Length: 176
Image (cartoon, rainbow, N blue to C red; front, side, top):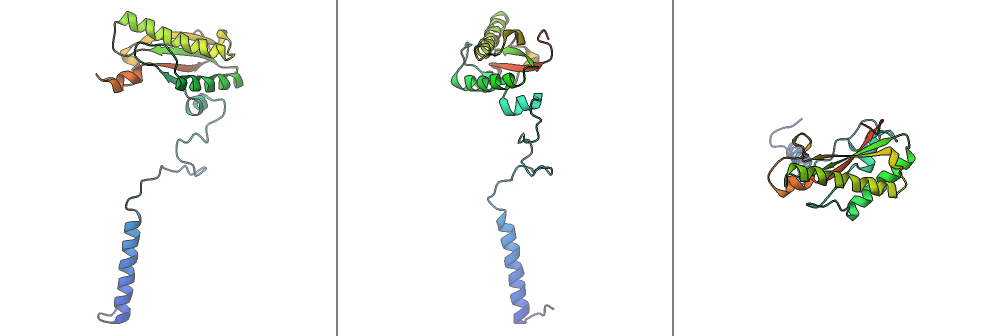
């Protein structure tokens, strides 16, 4: 029982205040942890529960996009690493066919961007076939700088660079 003025009551109050401060300060300066999945205690979206061989597996664990520099269809080392992963995955799951979609940024004419998008898609197709994926399983298609298929729309490099890409899409029919 807390009694005003008693040493025991004051000591107990001080301990409660110290405990409350310790708990309050424990959260200061720490970052929020990602939410946990109740099924496996992994961070949400970590890809641990993704079924192997699924479209989600391909997107989450392999990567389906590669990026290009301005006015170029040349694959850099980062793109080649992603495409190596794609080729290995596609070799393990031969039932899938792919459509490689090429895109360009807002700069240049519609005709130029359509041609550049196709060159980018064809560069990905050539790389995947060089890694043993049969050409019959792959189709290249250009969307140029289609306004409906932009990753991001704005007038600066941060948006343009995200739109200079090729996307490998899993399909059941290569003519899609």
